[in-house]
Length: 149
Image (cartoon, rainbow, N blue to C red; front, top):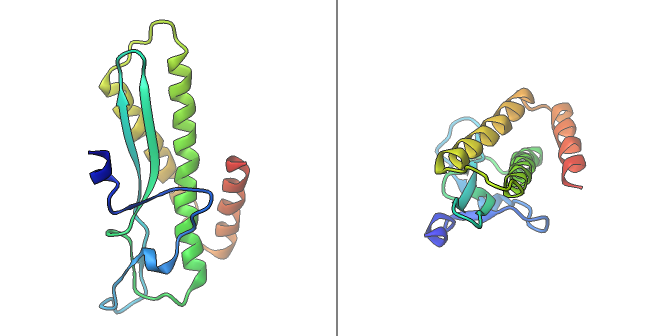
């Protein structure tokens, strides 16, 4: 099931940077557009031992571009992907702290709510940089660099 979920996705990695070929090219757009679809893929088991596995993903079928001459726009897509990875790591830290509880009362809803909360926090921070300018792009890239190191 996980393989099917990740089939059209790129999993975040330090070594993998997005390329224009990762986007679906849409020449029908009359004005320039780029859309970067990122998400969290999560699998877990709430029984002891608590198992939790997550990935930050980029959807190759839902991410589109109509003009590949704006290199800063590829940086913006990468920044969005990288920023979500910082939230995935925070979520993993929270899961690790839950695992340390002697009698954690974990339900499916706890993990579902946690995933939604971290994704919403990511979206709120991403939206705080909009509209994306070269200055705000440099700001988000610096924040990402600090968090990933």
